[in-house]
Structure formats: structure tokens, C-alpha cells
Length: 395
Image (tube, rainbow, N blue to C red; front, side, top):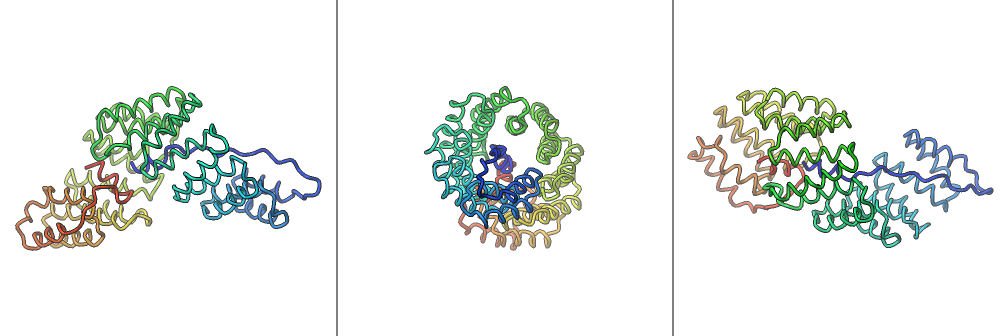
């Protein structure tokens, strides 16, 4: 679900027209850079713009175009450097501050992004992209109520701005305790997604987000309809198949759910959540070897996951070994989970305490010692890391 929050509000970058060419400047490399950029050959474009900038270091738009090439190429720090230079050369250019905000946002520096978007709005208070994206930067800092004000402002300026409706729905949803969503908030969020779809029927994010709300409202057929519409619009979106699997799993159709997770993994092999959910289903139907295999795959799928997520998978592995009556492997997995500090999350700890799989072992000395040591750990009742958000919502 964290990935849902991370996908909302991504707008296409606009492209400026060519600047007027002065007679004393050789624009050969500038024009070849523009051509390479239009063909998504960002490495070549960067080289050409760099050659041009070396000769003409005060040409602002060259930094702009090279900055976006760096951004598309995933080199966020270099993009920030170029957009800072663009702002320095054209401090009253709204797009310069906005572009710097985008680069900070993609780098994960959300406070800096918010400041840059605000500077753009100082220059033009009605700059819709800056209003919307400042709202997104606030969302990423869990400042959802303030983000809603930005989305409302964007809608008041342009009532056809479908993405702002979509973002308002997402912000309204995430402004609550998403581990225990309130029906009223879910309905209000869905209403915003309804409005987004009415304005732009092919806005797949609105269908996708509405499906998530319908899932938590237990309107499963409606969720499936929205997800199928998402796939019709964006057939290569792995998360749409992932959530289809979640819905079918909740409906008790394990075979169909696993098939949907496999489709998601074919599109994105690093989608550890799909392996995780597959493991849950195999555990539920009693196929413990397959459950273990899935949880181990979840650990390996994405090398960038945090150690706490690795601990969460060790916790799930321990549950399977408990069902298999393999106490040695169970204790080993629980100790690994403890080492990865996953029990610092209060929700995980509470799940451990109430887990029925561990009931036969609660009177054993090793289990009592482990429980005592875990009770001394300071717990946090918040989302310590992104990967645990999904666990909290699903438990």
C-alpha cells in the first residue's frame, strides 16, 4: 500500500520549446542534446549538453534540459546540481524552482522539495504543478492535513485537475490510522476518487486507489472491477495484478490469488510483497514447504529492503515452523527476527503475543525467555519503515 502512496501524483514533465538562438553561439551540441533527449537517449544527451555547457556556461536552458536527463536517468544529485544552477541563472523563473523541487522529491529530500515548490509559488501562486507536488511532498512527510489544503487549492484553481482529486482521496485515506481505517474516512476518500474518474475516466491511478478503498470496505467485486479497469488502461502495472491477488485471496480463492501474484512477479521480480502474500496463502492451505520457499524469496527479491523487513519475514518463517512442530527452526527464526529488530514495532510484537501458532510452545523455557527479552524492548506505535505499513494494514 506504501507503494500506492508512493505512485499517486506523478505528473508528466513538460518540455520547453527551443530558446531563440543567438548568432554568436554554436548550438550544434545543444540541438543534438535535445534530439537525443527526445529519443530517451539520456546518456548521449547528457554528454552533448555537457559539451555545450563547457563552452557556454551561462546558458540556463542547457542546465534545465541536462537536469531532466539526469532525473530520468536516476542521477538525482546531478539533477539537483543542474537545477540549482538554473535557479541561480534565472531566479524569477517558476519552472526553475519547480524543477529543483522535482529533483529533491525524487531524491527523497521532501523538506527541500517542499521549500522549492513554495519558492515557485512565491513567484506564481497559481502554478498548479507546484501546488500539487508540494502537497505530495507534504504527504511523504506524513503531513496529510496540510497536503489536503494544497490539493483543495489546486482544485479551486482548476476544477478539471483530475490528479488533484486523486491525491486528495489518497491524502484523506492516509491521514487516519491506516492499520484501523475508519469507514467514514474511507467513504470520503472514495468520493474523491469518484470525482477524479468523472473528470478523467482513464486516470488509472484513480481506479487503482479506489480499488484499495473498496478492498478495505470489503466491496470486493467493486475492487476487482476497478483493478481490471486499471489493467485495461495500464496492462504492465505489476501492482494492479498484485492487488487483484490480494482481493482474490481475501475472497478465499487461493489458486486465483497465487496466479495473479505470479503475473505481478513476471512484470516485477523484485516485488517482495507478492512473495509474502503467496507465502500467507500457502500457509493457510497447509502447503508449508511452499510457504517457506515464498518467504525466503520475499527476503531475496529486493536487495534494498530494510533489515526490519527481513526480520518480519523471519517472523513469518517462524510461524510456519511452529505449524510444522519444528521448534528448533522456529526458535532460530524468532532469534533472527529479534536480531533484525522487527519487534520494536508494536504491531508486530502484539501479533507475536496473540499468535495461535506459538500457543503449544508458550510454556517452554526458551519461549518464555524470548518473550521476556522482547518485552523489554521499547516499542513504537508508528510506521518505522515503509515495508511494515503493508503488514500493519493486513493484520
